[in-house]
Image (cartoon, rainbow, N blue to C red; front, top):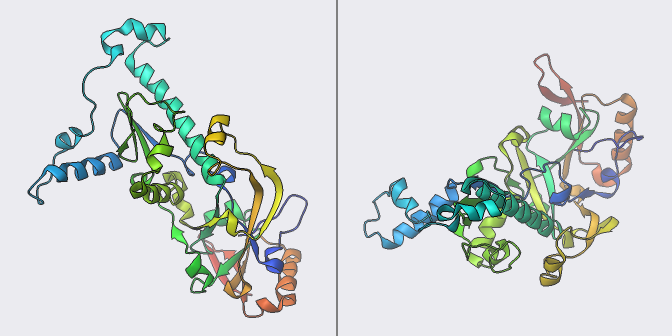
Length: 336
């Protein structure tokens, strides 16, 4: 969907050049769940239990046996006691009143650091192109087309372009999100235990970078990051394409440096590097199927769209429809 910029009628450049922005996660409007870990504090995530089931199967001869939660947690709960439990004065010296307050502080530190790491790392390489599954989604019109004053481009999903760059549905199910678990000092990333219980978040062997070096979990983990969002975003019913920034033909705007510790910049130059703020991907006009005009679009802006379409011979095949709000508050699309 396209929307007006301040001081302009509507932004119609995509009808002239076919360019659409692939937006890095750090610039998207979801600062809580976009490319971020879902934290679990002193309880286990669905991914943790899935990992434990796999470990249990290695020791189980009867494949039909279903382990109990207690049996699974045998593989998850840390053993022994911690110094702070037996020597509470050590906690007091560090400014904590209890192990719970210490654990909450560590959770905050780890999750904040790792989420910053992830968002910056992904934003150096990938951009998100968000799609609505319907041009009748009122939520999408109000949030991304200036309350119906913009327009929607409907694509032909059978076009070869979308066989190369395949849209994937976004899941809003918490069980599908990438997770980090902090359970009484033990840390897990999406079910997999951190290499060391005494985790140092700036140590490359003990951080998420070390976990992602395991080929068997990298793809699953990345998919859980890029194709999930928080439950509050469910009304969007989004599908998305993830474009490598290297595949974007046009790059504009300022050059951005990752907002990450210098030690990581130096340690992982292949992960963290400068990039253009705005990256545009060209979608062929033959993949355009329809233009839907917003239900609040002015007659002047409608004429601008019609003029752009009629003046572009490569768009001669598309239909231009307009949307209306019916008496039930639903968006309906009709011929002009």
